[in-house]
Structures are given as C-alpha cells and as structure tokens.
Length: 191
Image (cartoon, rainbow, N blue to C red; front, top):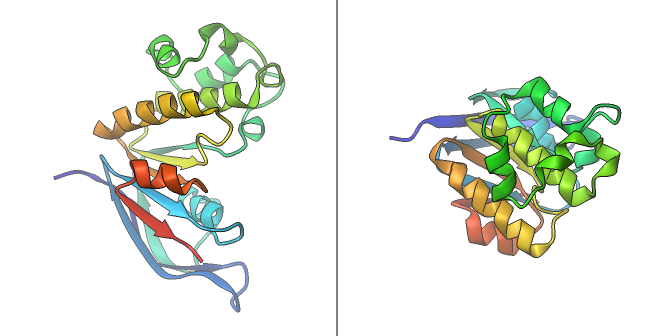
C-alpha cells in the first residue's frame, strides 16, 4: 500500500468570505501518483500550493503533508541574485548525485557555479528542479515545471520526474492539457 503524502480534507478558503476559491475541497495523493491541477488564471491553482506550503491558512478544513519541496513557476524569483546557484542548492540540500541528475536533464554542471542572472529561464528552471529533487521530498509541488523549456528538454524533465515516482507523489499545476493527459493519474479542473 503506497504511502499518503498529501491529505486535504474539507478545505474552505477565499480571500473574502463572499468569494470562495475552495469550498469543502478534498484531495489525497500517494507516493507514485501525479495529480494535475488545471484551470484558468485566478481559479486558485497557485493559492492551493500556498495553502499546502502553510503560507496561507484555510478558513476550515485540514491539510496533512509529508516533507515537500517546490518547483516554482518563475525560477528567477526563487533564487537570490547575489549567490551562485550551487551555493543556494547546497543551503537546502545534499549535493550527492547532482552530477548524475544534471546529465539526466541535459544541464551543464558548470552552470551551477554561475549567478541566477547568468542563466536562461530554461536553465534556471532546470536548476530549480534539481534543487527540489535533491531535497529528497516525499511530496513535490510543481508549478508549471516545464513552461520555460523547449519541447525536447520538457520531455527529458518529465521523464526524470516520472522516475522519481517510486519515492514521491507529485502535485502539478499546468496550463498544458496535453502534458496533463500524458503524465497524470488524475486531473482536477478548477473553474
């Protein structure tokens, strides 16, 4: 029986009581699963991640989660501009196995010694994914993890994420319906 890494029960949340984004929302995610959240801008996709991360508090309901890491949609905002990418990864994760992971996603290991502004958006997004995986989470929150990547790199990154399913569960946000259909065990559409 696979371990449950995320259990959301009867979540209610809104920025105002008159306009709720979630009302009695429940979701369970286990190791080995990818659940994808689809929906238009403003439907609450990123808000759900903020609630799971504990940055926002639900009005009602309960969120239980295993140790998690996050891949942010905008990698530039998730790295400090005055430290090398490698130093920032080393601050939160053990670097053992990083060279192998770099090869698996077509990322030049030497780029880790650069500053975030010296990398392209796609390179920095792959560095963000490396950091998240090296943190050895049980739950991976992936907000548009491949949106800044070209099609071939997207495929490599998704194959790498799929390989991690033996030890993690992935909750992913994407606007890419085809990607969601290709890799997801379940798709949740928000209105």
